[in-house]
Image 1 (cartoon, rainbow, N blue to C red):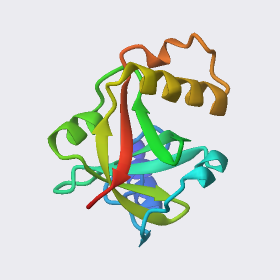
Image 2 (cartoon, rainbow, N blue to C red):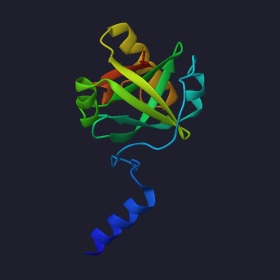
Image 3 (cartoon, rainbow, N blue to C red):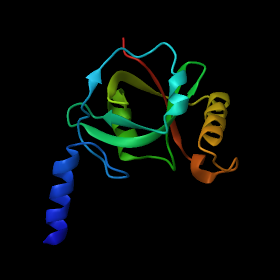
Length: 145
């Protein structure tokens, strides 16, 4: 019973935001126009991604930028949020209480995938031969039109 009460208390304090590795629901924040250049992302370690617009599901993720493009990766293959993107590519990304409405596109080009992998290795001080990218799904986040 104490565990249940503790969970309810934590959920009440945090609302529907993802907490650590625990997913959340709809993200709150100011919806704003995405920037032309995502260079500011280099100073940001973790962002929140919301998928599944009909029943919002949000997670904390690492993110990198390359040549004004933004990328996220589902390390180790298929995740719940990446399955949602396969069904509906509309996502919302929260950075510092600002929400950007974007569209996720799967990256399949080997050269682009390698550049993204190197960006993650550099930004997050990962081992260059990290198995974390084996079978990873990588998505580019673009503006919705």
